[in-house]
Amino acid sequence: MKQSILLLLLATGTFTLSQATPADTTIRGISIQFSYSLSVFPPSWQAAPVNAGGVQIDNNEVRRSLEITIRALNKYPQNALRYDLRTIYFLKSMKFFGVGYGGTNSTNAVYLTNNGVAMGFTELYMEQTFHHEYSSILYRNHPGWFDDKAWQANNPPGFIYNDPENGVGAIRNNASSQDLDSGFCKKGFLTEYSQSSLENDLNTFAQNLFSPSEGFWKLVDKYPLINRKVKVLVKFYNRLDPAFTEAYFRKLK
Image 1 (tube, rainbow, N blue to C red):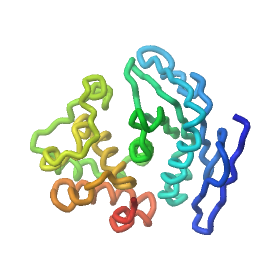
Image 2: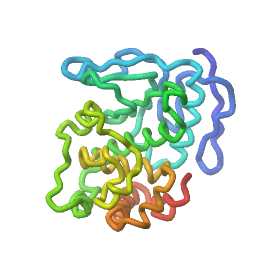
Image 3: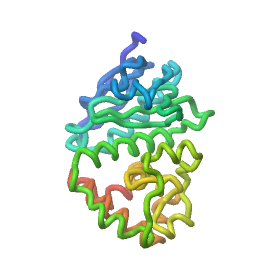
């Protein structure tokens, strides 16, 4: 891909895509990569038992992927991006442990897949996946900023997250639904997948703070346990940048 894009830096510090199909590029200091080789994965992922593998994204999905990325990144003040995110990789598909993944993350990189709207890779799904994965990086990189005890105080008594593989088992066992579910909300969880690990629980809330599924804020206002978890997570993001308040998130589309 030899074509390039022109990115306009607005007075607000946000970017707009203004030209034809882009190649690998850089946005706000973050490298956006559409070219695939096995080397995009850390060496430890390439070996057994992870056995990482991927497929090059289709050219006709590159521009849409970048548009979604720009929209997602524009929701973060620069201080919330500068130190924690270096690269976003787009692939058509990827597998780890023999299991297909929609997204994952490493120390300072997010890996996302896009196989077209017809296969379920909608704008909402893709943007939520970015926020989901980036929240893991932030959670790891800022130990002590997230109040784990306050979070777990809103889980059922004696509850133990049920996937020691941090979501791999849930995906493998087809227990990774991200559909909002009022039955789970009564117990303090947004989705089935939220119950797999604390990190996945946090991730699911994060993706809905930045790119809410329909009805998310109604559930926040209806179920006290969900409401309290939102406040714990907003407090975490507010430590990253004071612009992140509940009012800020409620205005996001």
